[in-house]
Image (cartoon, rainbow, N blue to C red; front, side):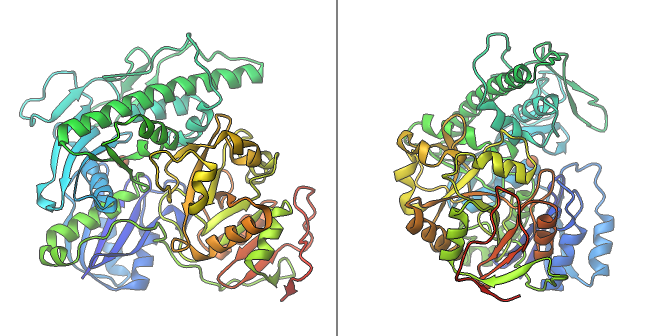
Length: 569
Ligand SMILES: [Fe+2]
């Protein structure tokens, strides 16, 4: 039984299942390199490479009323895929976020909180925050509360009791509104989150988010018309006046982000407690774009009563709704199979394409040598930036060792060096991957047994901060990936070798892309990124090879220093 989930919104994606197993899940942007791409033609091509027979194709889109799937049906036919039955995912956007997270969590029943910028249109308005009760009966999913935007605070006639209309904009819109106000794309909320750590309490900044949502004196909804377009405008907010003093401007922006982050965390904490109260469940799931706020996730976890178990979905961006559509379709439309073969809880995120080693090297641009994990560990400890490509690409926004750039976490100036290499803002923080068995020796893992998908920025233990300065953010935290051997054997061996060499069981890990680009997918993408940057080394652990640029000469990036490397090319 082949089931295909297709999502069209920003972060458009497909998810292909064979019975209860995910065979492929990939975002279109990885294939087109158009960030947040809303089409799925290239992803469908990848499906055709695996199977030409689809039993059930569930399709979903964010803007239910405006999205035409006709061209996709035609395209699917044109590339030779036969679909036995199309199923329009009647569940709205938020319930598909919830479906993805519920089956991934492994809980038998759970209360689920979904917060994103905005979800689907339905007859009562536009979703912006939902609370569900979910259990293993796929037809028993219950919406317990839903805030919808665009109306006054009056009840909408005919709407079910769980619908709560509001004029205030939601938390996700507030966050993206301030992100735009700071000069970035509204979807780049991670930058605002990173900046917030540099901020301080400032009495001049008004509360942005209260119990009702966005402060109406600051945020205005515009353009809410019969087509249900919604835009957010941050009203002229005199706090950030033009300043020629860049330091002063930076601090003003950071203070604004700090207040936003504080308000955001308090709001989400209260909604998680609402989810617990309304669902009667101690197992609580948080998903939707706002769940990617790893700083907030950790702080909220610390505050929650001990009897609440929190699961934060790693595919919380809209790419996860393709998986949610495939999951719920499998569970509902194949009830006998579903009872026999339950969807397994998420154990990894490597659902993308495998690397094909079909690259061609021309004109001595790159050379190749045989390497071992030990030699690569040495290369990194010598102060080199080393990219790694292997296996299948990660689904969702995090790089977890299959499409990553690695560096030595001990380097004092490492953050500046890698930010320069990636062409990012100098203040952006970096993540780290730690061998799971050593995580507690370096990080405050209170209430967090593992963090395999980088969903939490945890406190670095005070005694360890000076040992890993370039992955410790200004507030003393680090977004971490805990790693076991089973999760990624090659990456584990490399960090183990680095540990033997340096006594530090951690590698600096950032996604393999340059600022503004999507994460590399293929070897060709990787080589192109190397040509456009100062990254000179590419480690291919599955082949035990290193590709490198022979005349690397940047001062911060040394020549290959390994005497025992056996040059192949
Ligand atoms: Fe969403």
